[in-house]
Amino acid sequence: MATTEAPLFAFGRYREVPGKLRQALQALRVHEPRLTAVLHLGDIVNGNPAGQAQCDQEFELVASIFDAELGSEVPAIHVIGNHCLSVPRAHLLQRLRIPDTCYYSRSLVPGWQLIVLDTTEMSGHSDYPPESEQYQEAQEFMAAHSMAEHPQMSSWNGGITRRQLAWLQAQLGAAEAAGERVIVAAHHQVGQGAVRATHSAWNRDAIQAALLASPAFRLFLAGHDHMGGYACIEGRHFITLEALLEAPEGGNAYGVVEVRPSEIRIMGTGGVTSRRLAV
Image 1 (tube, rainbow, N blue to C red):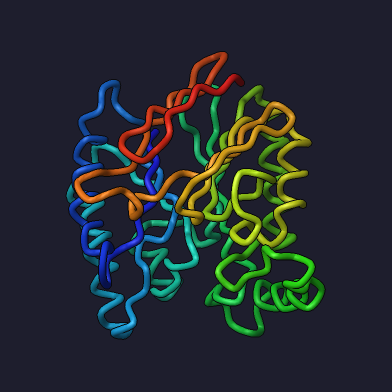
Image 2: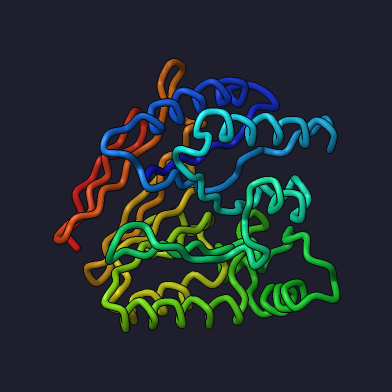
C-alpha cells in the first residue's frame, strides 16, 4: 500500500503538484513487490478562487492523473478531505468511486483490514442538506463545543457522526473476531500529539478512545496538517503524513507501507519520514 496527500494548483507552488503527482504514481505503479493499493489521504483539490468551473476543471485533471498513471493495475483508495468538498459531494463520490456512505473498509492482505473514515461528515462544509442527520448533528456539536475551549473546532476540521462511530466500533469488533489487525485512515488526525490541536478532528477523543479500546487496531494514517506528525499511544501508532504540496521544488513526498507479522515499515520518499513501527 502507498500513501500520498495531494492538494492542487490554483497558484504558486500548487502548480507543481500535477507533475509531482504523476511522478509519484508512476513510481508506485511499478513498485516491486506490487502494491495492494494507493491510498490518497484527501484534499485532491485546493478549491480555486476563480470559481466553481475552474475548481471542477482542476479536479478532473487530478482525477484523470490517477486514472492514467495507475490504470487498472493498482487501485486507488480515496479519503475525503475538507478541500475535496470544493467539488459537490455527489460528483466527488461518483468520479472517485467512493461508496455512498463515504466511509468503508476493505481487505488489504491476509490478516489486515483497512478502515477509511469520513471526518468531513460532521462539519460546516459537509455538503449535506440542512434536514440531514449529518448536518443537524454537526450543528449540535458546534453549539456544545466552543473554539475557546476546543481549538480543534476550526472550520477546516470536522468529525464523524454517532452513526459512523458505531459503525467503526462494529468493524473493529468484527476484525477482532476474525483475528485480523486494522489500519485506519482519515483526513483529520485523532491521535493526541500526532498533529497540531488546531488541525485535529472535532470529536478526536471519542474516535481515539474507540480505536484504543480495540486490540485489533494498530495504525492511524491522516493528512491535513501538511508538516506531518507522529505519536505512539498505548503501543498504537498515529501518523500524519507530510504533504506532497510542501515538498521542495524538484522534490516529492510519498511513502510505501509494508505490513509484517511484528512491524509496519513506512518507506518514505522525499519529504515523507521513513519509520519502523512495532505491532
